Length: 464
Image 1 (cartoon, rainbow, N blue to C red):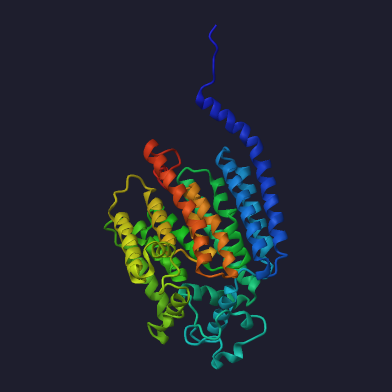
Image 2 (image 1 turned 180 degrees about the vertical axis):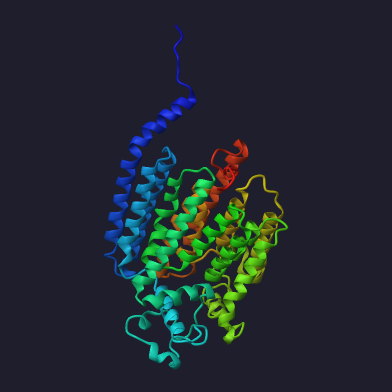
């Protein structure tokens, strides 16, 4: 008698049923392990412990990747989503009340809010100016970076957040709480997006458990949380065809960190007018209250920051450093690289603008491409600049981007600078494996075509 074998679909279903039995216990185990590491890491006090911190963060990244792998192979489950959210909250609570030691940017946030509350334009004076002497204290002022020479660098959207937050409290813990509120808003928007694309909502773990976001937002209170929240809202509004709201949300992100403006061509629907008009009006209205210092004045420390971080000399850029080592510095001027970078981003923007949408989710892929190109071309020295890519990875998970957003922890080695060779080596650690993994993924996609869950397979179900 012929032996009967189960079909491939039944074997897959059986595997998922068995996997579901172990999904929650495994996630609890991994979540608890990561939580212990967050708590233990609080014993680090400063620069002397940074090497130890990097090791802990990379171990947490491995735990995170394992948890992601488990969630992807588990059947959709409400209980799994609950565990994901609970541990995401516990991770952040473990760091919320601890003083930030990875970055001191948050003290400038509080200071700018205090200055505005006193009726002073935050772009007018540096913190050390005698005009602001009555506002100084022993808690915030001594910890402001560049207080002796730098005006604020943060755009009006960030300034509005600082003003509203410090109107309630000028404590650092409260400012971190506000940023966690924005992160919660981003998680909500991503949950809505996942559901609209018929993807399991438990995949929000990709965003909610990412150690980079936990450390940089709950730990350091970076305003990137607000920018990411507005980017997520812009993606959601675009999904629901609320083009004016998408423009306003993207403008909100741009008014916080400037660089989200590069997403405009990706989110724009050809020949529509609502999104660009809403974007432009929102930006203009936000800048109006601060123009008493002039158009140049509202740029704040941005030109000085570009000089300080090596954007003018070219030492900032990984690809430029490689080219200079290959053919000589004189052969590759900084201006040439900047032209190359702008042409590259311009080409991607043009492609985003003209490419026909085969389904309603293509705009996410286009936005992800241009955001990633911007990060690689800029090659920032600070890990938190990679954080906004995690929101896209939640919707379009790919191994190269998991690597890129976790390997960036090695940039904290720059706390103990050892010259330009050190920066180049760190950039090689970050970008070379990313390029290799990306090339491999592209090669496999060309050979096999789009696969389930890939860039082309976001559901076309009408948004609710």
